[in-house]
Figure (cartoon, rainbow, N blue to C red):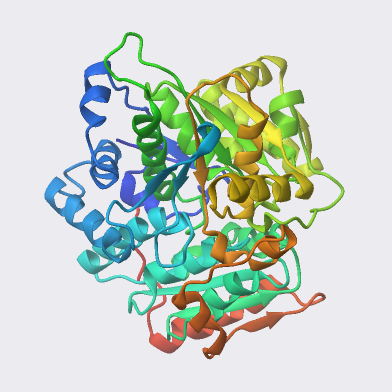
Length: 481
């Protein structure tokens, strides 16, 4: 199994090479050269597996046994899920009116990113210990990625993590989950800008090839293939939980509704679909609706500004994983991707070619929800079920409540409602805070401010240099083949 760049300008790498990369050297994103295809018998057999076992089966298709022996891979995944609160790791709540909510948030930070990042942290540790190497992890977060990434590597001697959060655009709890982790290898920056603005200095540092190589930069955002790979399992588990039967031919279709920001989860769904899973995918967004406009009209263009919404982790204008989806749908046409993405990068506006837009609209449905829609879905779900939805999950529930077709459907729930007190209060609901979250309020916190007018890339550059040189570890990178 080899991985290639969506833009075709970088050599193929194995899983280890993709794991230790952010963007590919040509600015593209790594994807498997070939997507495995599963037959009906395999799907029926997998239908009896737990979520944990599904992750193991799927990862074994994308990580060769020569690189990570299967027994070792199983151990790494078991270790990754050892801190999850639910015995099944994730849990499906079956509610009234056919609303199925797949709770992906039973990890340490109460967000779905704990699932993929806990595994990715184990994979990193495996290779770094094996080769006695060090990496510098650089992460931008719109809310939950930062805390999940921090928890996956905190205290590790062979990794330093630098996290940029958009000050005032995360909830207080999301921010505290990052700034209260006091570890020598954790460095948090509170930037006075939005989610898209904090991505710019990160891209700049990765684009500086000499710097990236010297300090062994890598990303744990969903540009990292490892995160997409683990998230494929969400769709398989959702399907098997919600399909009425696996004993009929053809297998029944289940609709998976995916709250979408950077697009990692919806990309994983497209890959699951290409592997043969009979799912219909719906990308649901908030008022930052570039994905919705792309699906409906082929209009992949920025709005004038990022809108601040109740579903703050989805307040994103540049969903970078759309490049992976478009590459898949174009038949792996790297030349076309390079042309389209360079055009978008230059003008922040792109009209998809007609045939590509047709394939996209056949693959995905989409829906946009306003803050009023989000509040309405949260209120209805509570009134009917005494069940609290986070605002991102409510975007998916809003779509479900609009449907009258009776199709089996599963809404992915990316975070616990406990992390979004302001949204709950806006909906007239009472937050229910677990003790781990309440305890954050009294803990020491630490972060470095990044003010407007500062050269954020230069501040980061200097901090990384100082940290790595202090430890005498510059240049001890992982060789990528």
